[in-house]
Image (cartoon, rainbow, N blue to C red):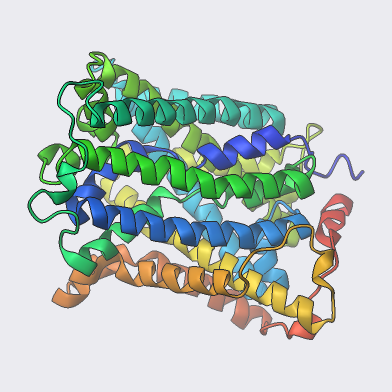
Length: 485
């Protein structure tokens, strides 16, 4: 019975490592990184990405400590439920499911935009529907097929960034592309810092969105073959990924393209011809740069949609297991796939995509409503870890029982919590200054939605903040519970 009603631990260490390496490499790096340099200048963009990168590293170490101790599919929703308040776990789970179900629809729409670069006369919906079917089949087959697909798509992204860095540095020193620039663009006009602190804060938001998805490593813990070994390894790589991919890539772009260039203003997949990566490859003499980068961006978008389908399905499954969603969503088939949760998520993704064709306003509303949900999930991770470690101490447990220890506690989760709250509040400071209530309501829509979910559960079940001495620190208990359902 346990085998039949449980997900399967089939994700290998290499799967998790590559998911961690490639998880947040996407259009945020390949296209939107240029707008960050344009907004805050080369120095400002680097400061913002280093700041957010440090925060994400602390968040991942917090998640890693909890995920190696209690490797469950519900991840931070389960941790919020057990270590903080059941109402917070309920709101976190539904918030995260909603985020990825909507993001899935956005990604399949983006895939169509990318494919129209080569096939301009084919209707977009054909490509979107095709992408959704392929992603559904990958996730329906087995968790190993998801892991293997992500492994190879992440590898393509990683190799692209590495080639870009090599070509970029050769171009900076004049070995490729003719004229050497060295650091001259860092002293051009108002560079390196443009617009001061407000501009850096604006880029904090852009950088934050670029790193969304790194928390997926916590969701995979419930299906990892050896979480005690693979999760710490994957999390260590998060730090190097942030340093190598984002920081060095932005440094290369800033050296080669002045912050005043209008080509840096592109921010989505339709701007592939002015992607900073395309421009740098072209400058180095690579004639087919746009087509190559378009193929890489297509890989990124499909990978993001694939991860979104996996994350939202597993979160809906965990909600079904805990009783926070209809019990049917807590069922799995013989291959360990939570098929009802997968079908439910696919249907929502399809309906959201259809609303982009037939109801632009509904689609815009849903995308706006999911805007800040990723940051809200990060706040949940920081809170849950802070309470988890304090409960560990309050109950007289020895830290040596932890298979992986987050460094710099409590600095890490508290710093992550403060930066996340700053980013959430700083989303649209201009609208607050101008008292533009319509813009404020659109930007911050996910915050009241989250509060409504939290209060609904809290008032209905009259839950309270769990005292530290009463927090359940039993290892794997929920795992056995879901096996017995």
